[in-house]
Image: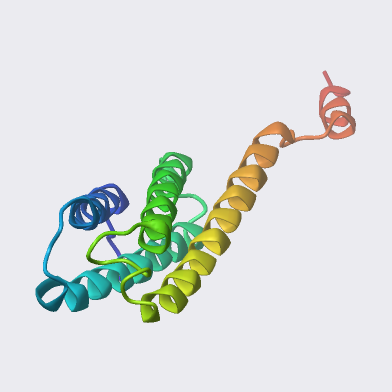
Length: 147
């Protein structure tokens, strides 16, 4: 990744692409025209969500890191819901109409669940580090003894 990586903008753009896929599920597009591209978009979103998470995990001191983890988690939830609609929906582009999609969607759901767990664990660890004092009570007493 580049030295400067704008997580907020990238997360925003992934959200826009995800909404476009969600719109495809609501509409009744011709699968011959849109099935391949829709699956490419879903793969792209899955890949980008993984890259964004990796970038946030590699930069624990990034300003607004927790906020971006929350944003990423929200998109993961939307992504999981969208994948579920592919599995359970009856639209023109669905696992019901194209059973081969079912295996692919289940794999992507597994990726999403794993990323959500990592985000949860990372946010929990960050919250715990905020609770732990930088200087223990014993160290503080020792430092203040001289005064």
